[in-house]
Length: 608
Ligand code: AGP
Image (cartoon, rainbow, N blue to C red; front, side, top):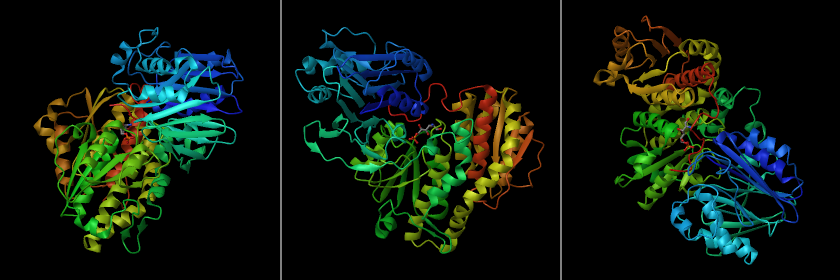
């Protein structure tokens, strides 16, 4: 998704903007730009297609001491990736950057004939609209922005400057995040807090429908209806180390390998293994409310959806009397789905900004259903709009492919399920094994990563020649297989799809030939023998199988067996998923793709 940065203060705005845009690179983009103003309002606008390095080359030849500026990384929605379509866009003295989509930009454009459009973007229409109210500086910039936004339909996070008032930045948001960094004689802004880390620990998260005027020593926030808003300054929870690679070649490998620590953060203060219980304060549901729950709806996209599917299997295992439905947000938001009384909705999102998930949340709230967030990004829109929630606290997840967030989302939801079961008086003997394994899981993850990493690297190299893959599993290994397939497809671009083992003979078995390899999760347990016979079905058709298992019983002549050994049996799929994560990473390296910023994808999908 696009990234926005801005600075007004005593330091060089170009430096802040470039370093800030680099912090936001992980979000995915295809062009970038920065505009700065000197104290007389002379603008230096630099834009470049492709990576920020191309913009840096231009900046090096156009160094300015300017103390105010805004910058943007663009992920093309309207108009191809190009310098002309890159932000900031200009209209008269106004320069503007924008995240989101102006849905009625065509009709607005009809009324802006006096502007000579130079791009195909909706953003330039917004800049021209602001300028049409600004009347060359006759009206304050903030008022012109407000008047323009009142005509806009769609989503936006914007920042605007004017050569007529080179000491102020006006920002506004509706549906696309903006955070203001509060400094000493300097004020910053960004579309996420990682661009502010190291500059300030004090942040103000703008809310939808709010507009702010920033100078180096003042912040004025109002609603679009001119009601003053008192700014709530919050602490930025992260630090520089958390957003740097820490010695790894890629953020993805760092985030895979730090899962023992990140899961520990998720569990901190929430697991009482002695008493065999968990305690989640965030959901804010009373014992009575927990006891009444009959139905869980779990909502998410992509990896968050898979985490919800897997958590749903577990919750059904130990709370027999509630039903769990896990849904894809982009589908559910348009369904006319009835949510029964005594339901609670879990809204799962690493970024807390995914447009479809946020829209689902708002639809579900309209039905009066309690919503609980399972979110990572502190202060994100979903985190602030749910009724209660549990932060997973895995720290910034920079790589587009989600890994540590998945593991912690699953366990956080399992802990929420255990909280319900505890309130319903489910026998402690039933729940204790889950609590004990959860407590042991960080260490089990550490030993698993250490024991399989080299082996998985060499296996991935051998299978890098394939362009098609089938991932297979039963029960809790099935959503895990779905997550493994997504990991592989989204970074290696291999056409990987997951099927329930039991579904093979209903169609997918026809696929098995030398174009494919199969990645099968075969944990020991009640369905182990069934999974083994499914493996035999694939072998009989000449399958090229990699089997991940946690039992030495497995002895079929597949091409490769990767064995994990841990006494975590219930959560074996979580450990098997580590193999799938590493496999996707090393396969992608072997294919030479961009590991952290795969083509066409963004870290946070804030548009539909
Ligand atoms: C997963 O690796 C992908 N990056 C993507 O599917 C992601 O999980 C999805 O876009 C949901 O993002 P969220 O958790 O931030 O809402």
